[in-house]
Structure formats: C-alpha cells, structure tokens
Image (cartoon, one colour):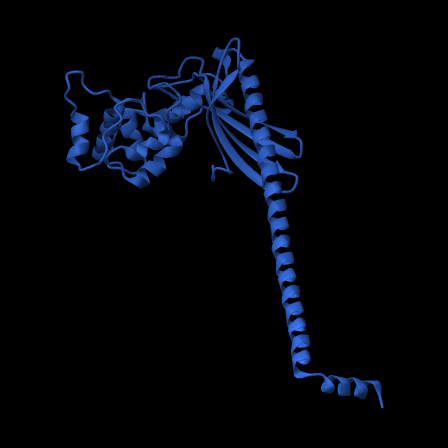
Length: 308
C-alpha cells in the first residue's frame, strides 16, 4: 500500500472533531498571515511617507537658507552704495549648496502706496485697469476714506457709508496694514482688486512713483502721463532707464514721479535645485543705513506658503 493511501486511511480514521480542529488551525494561520501582510503594507506606506516628509522638510530648510542668503546679498550690494546713487532695480545670480538662485530686486517706490498716493494717482490706476473713470474716482475716494482718521468732532461720514451699504464692518480709518486689505474697501470689484495687487504696496512711504522701477500700468496712472510724454522721458533718461540708475540730467520732467530708489526693496527670486525641483519666493526688505542690522524683512512669501 502506498504512503498516500495509508495517510488517507489514517485521516479517515480520525474523529470528525479532530478534522475540524485541524481545519480551524489552518484558517487561523491564514488569517494571521493576512494580518501580517496588511501590517507590513501599512508600515511600508508609513516609511515612504516619512521619507517623503523628511525630504520635503529638508528642501524647505534649504530654501529658507537660500532665501535668507539672497536677501543678505541684496542688502549688502545696496547698502555698500551711497543712498543717492543706489540703483532702482537690478539682478544677479549665485550658486550655493545644491542650488542656483536668480535674484531680481526693484525699488518699492515703483508701486503705488495705498497709504500715501493722491486721489488722482489711485483713480488713474483703476481707470487704466479697466474701470470707468467716474467709478475709478469713487474707488479712490473709498481708499482715502479707509485710511483717513475719523473727524475729531465725532462725525464719521465714511463709517456711515459702510453702515448705509449694510456692511458688518467699517473702514479702518488708519493706514493700510497690508495691500490685500484693499479687498475690504467698500465698492471695489474683486476682479479689479486682483488686477491692482501687482502694482500697489504699503511699504514705500512715498506719494511719488519711481519711474525706473514702475510697471507700465503704474506709469500710465500718473496724472498727465501720455504715451508721448513717457517716450520723451525715457529718451531723456537714456541708459539710466535700462540699468535702474537714479534720474539725472536736464530734460527729465519729474513732476508726479521720482528717480529716488528709497530704502524699501522688493526682491523676487527663483531657486533651481540640483534635483530639478524649482521654487519661487518674494520678499520686501527695508534697508538700514548705519550701525546694527543692515535690513529688516517687511514681507516674505514662498511656494511653501502657496504660489508667489
């Protein structure tokens, strides 16, 4: 008799309870193996997520260091130059660690300051961005009302405008703290606020606009500016308009704008890592002449906060 036949006869001779016990053990063993496999899968996912998180965190730390280095290099370049000769814009590149960094800086006076700009300049900006001029003047009035303190005699016409409109809040009646606060000003359409954001600031502290650092939309907003006047001005500036040097020489009509670079600089940078990852950042710094820290960071945004 073969061994297989002998085994079958032996199993057949076993009581039914013994056969059920053997089957239960096999099923239990299979469940344990399935559970172990699931745990192994969960652990593998955990390890992968942990490694990915550590990689992202490491890249973020590298990016913060590179951004800081870019701000320090920009501040060093600008503070090493006499304030009267300071360029209004410029760019440079450097390699540090495992990344290349491209830096571009511009005077913040190239933007329209929401706390300082006159009504005509604000209205000109909104008109240039697509608003009817009558509406643009209304928006400019609301911006000025937002930043203007209430009358000391207790009357508050601007707050009454907000109450009449049924808004649950009133105007700040103090300087704008952030350019994004523009979206709270009564009556301004969201699309117009979005269009205006690249051209406004709260950091320049100047009513004028720096022609060498300003975008065409800002230059077009200057009262009395025309294409012919702008062309004549750029021709009078000559090479200075190309390298951001201060305005000098006869023939440049500076009414409504300036060539002074000031102390507030907006810095845009692109970081190209060796692993081909890329990120962008933007910061505004205030240069400090004299002893102590050479600059102070007024604003900082990078891709870890969201698209710059």
